[in-house]
Length: 306
Image 1 (cartoon, rainbow, N blue to C red):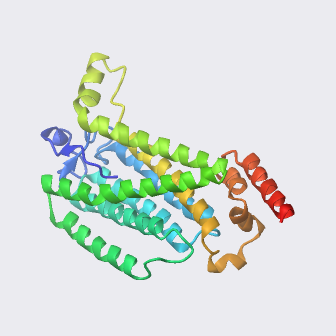
Image 2: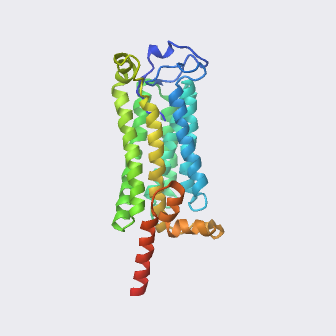
Image 3: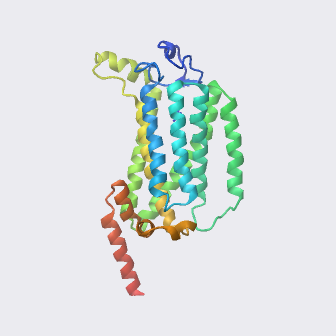
């Protein structure tokens, strides 16, 4: 991912490598070409594959039970991961755009999903058309700007829909807990903890890069190396996105009509819709069996009363 710590500094070129000199407008808190001359930022590149894994697993595990727009969000997370790999491996401007532009697009997809959260589309074609035009506009801003201006424009375009999406998912979580869905609430709490922790470590490294990169290894005589907090941001944010996306997906499976290809599902796929807590316990090791059994018992009692 491309949250920026600071503009490229002279120390970034002290260790020339395969892709030197870097042409990106930003550099990160990891000395370049230290592990290998083939990769500029080794740990940031390696951790970027977490996004690829999350995106691919999201599509592979849920392709039978989710609508196309949900699968698109997972696919775009994988695209962001590949772009992040290209960016951190080369520190080229082309890699930076391959990282940042999909981030802008995926957050707009989440915005659409979380606004159209009912069985009937409230805005019809107008909302996707407006988001498409906005995507073209912010893509142009990110592509044709540079330096400090590019930093400001990118985050001004990315942060508002990011926090809006997080707030909307929180509202879905509140709706689930009020309905008594314990396992789904646990999924949100895990995702929120991962995502917020990622933001915290990213902000800490942004403000105290010299501490983690220079001072900490020096005062400990190398016993405590650079903790590579930006790499941990990749892992934590990817994990958080997976669980937060599942939170919205599970809620929508209860609110929206079943997809057109639902007739082709097997019994396990139908179970993912009718009893998502049980299905998710098999897929992501979240203990939802008890919660799902309680839900089914409550539904049986309601039928008897009728």
